[in-house]
Image 1 (tube, helix red, strand yellow):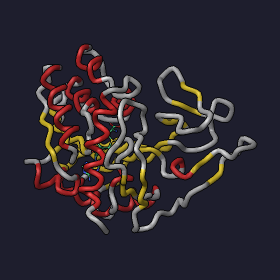
Image 2: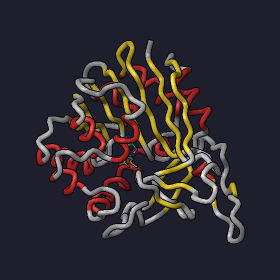
Image 3: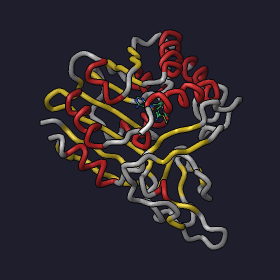
Image 4: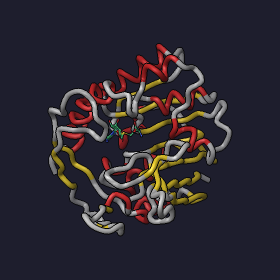
Length: 273
Ligand SMILES: C[S@@+](CC[C@H](N)C(=O)[O-])C[C@H]1O[C@@H](n2cnc3c(N)ncnc32)[C@H](O)[C@@H]1O
């Protein structure tokens, strides 16, 4: 395999100015200006997490850091980690402007153990992370190495089945249009556009991505000695992704006519005994 880390990192660095120019998803200025603002993702996840005050949290693959900073606003002692230098620079700047004492570290996720000191009460990841990683067993061992005894790993992610679904041109049934069971080989994609519209194009347009089944994700964690304490699937998601979804008052999207149709995201929690 080519050096997927450098290839994907260059792609993510290019996305940062595009994401910054968009008010659709990452409104960094509004977040900084309003000290009461907590990201939608953290508001959702905090309902299924323990009290966060004074918890030592590491947020892996934190992008522009708005979820990371939200944890700080809820009283946690939080570190964000991402391999994109451009993302980390934006996140550090936002922390300074928001007057939040948060560390942001630049590192590949598989090197996280070497990149930070000590153990954490909570390791956290969310939305759009697993598809960038080739090996769920390796992720499980990194998570286990970061947690203190009794520590919790919380992941909320797009459901892997949702990643395979497409609407056919006629009718309202869904098509499974790509393989649910991914392979060890990466999917090589080329796109000059990111998942949210913004100014500019991605110059380093090639990415390497992987599809992981739900069982692969859970097995990667429990085979690293972590104990499963929660697995939940949700019939709503964070964006319509080409489907006729309706936005609810909480900001999430669902099939209004058939709200039980398909799993669109999931949460898994494991603990280190
Ligand atoms: C879709 S974002 C996920 C974060 C958050 N849910 C969001 O939407 O802002 C994916 C992040 O993962 C980072 N990333 C991708 N591969 C990585 C790797 N191997 N190590 C560390 N970070 C990585 C990217 O730089 C990007 O910031």
